[in-house]
Amino acid sequence: METLNPVKALNQAADLISPTYWVNEILDMALGFNPMDETKKYFAGDWEAYAKCGEVWGNLGKLCMDISKNVNAGNITLDRTWDGNAADAAYVYFKDIADRCDDLQSELDTLKTEYDVISQGVWAAAEAIGSLLGAIGDSAAVAAIAAAAGTMMSWTGWGAAVGYGLAAAEIVKIVELWGKTTAAVNKYQLIIQAADAIIATAGGTIATKFADFPLPNGAYDNPVV
Image (cartoon, rainbow, N blue to C red; front, side, top):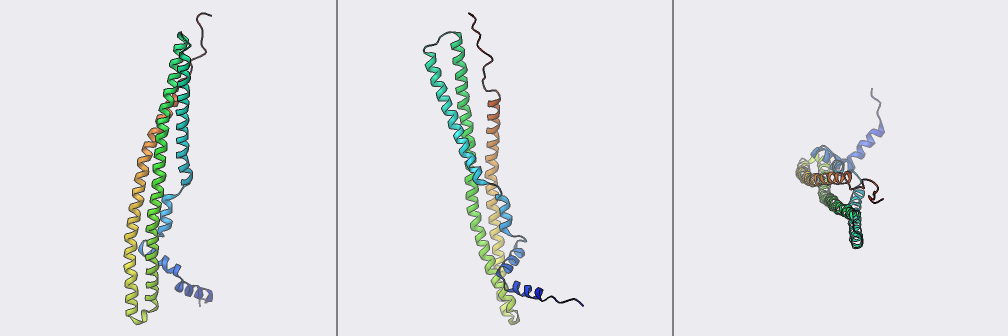
């Protein structure tokens, strides 16, 4: 004979009157999973740190712009008083550096823009999806109350019909709201994929420009000496 466990009976009774239990039952019935847990998977990561990366790329772009202006200004000033082959070679060399810094600034600004696009897209998507999840929670709560009432009033017949009918209507609504949620997630993923492609291109361009950054071939050898 199976030993009776009074605690088990009490737990079952507690589940019957627990709104959390009923909400979980409704969500499991409607979707087969917890929508909040499922949605969090798409937003995993430190997005605040990611947004700060955009600021860093922007600051690096400003640095390259300032270096370019400084090198150009010095080059022009030096060219006014220095003549000869060495002067001409130096002018070309420093102009190449300034031009390359301008190119780097353009690519770094592109990185900043696309990082901002992704960060803002994530925040906007999170707000929209948060509202939808709130609506799902509201419908689950209503359905839970209706289902619980239907169960407790099942002896009346009509009470069960009303309770379960309302619960069923809310379950349909939950499914529709989850459809809108997944559509919002897909939209946000498309934004990220498009920005990622631009970021990859800009990153490759920056790497190429750094790889062939103009450097002196060696110390200057004055032919007169």
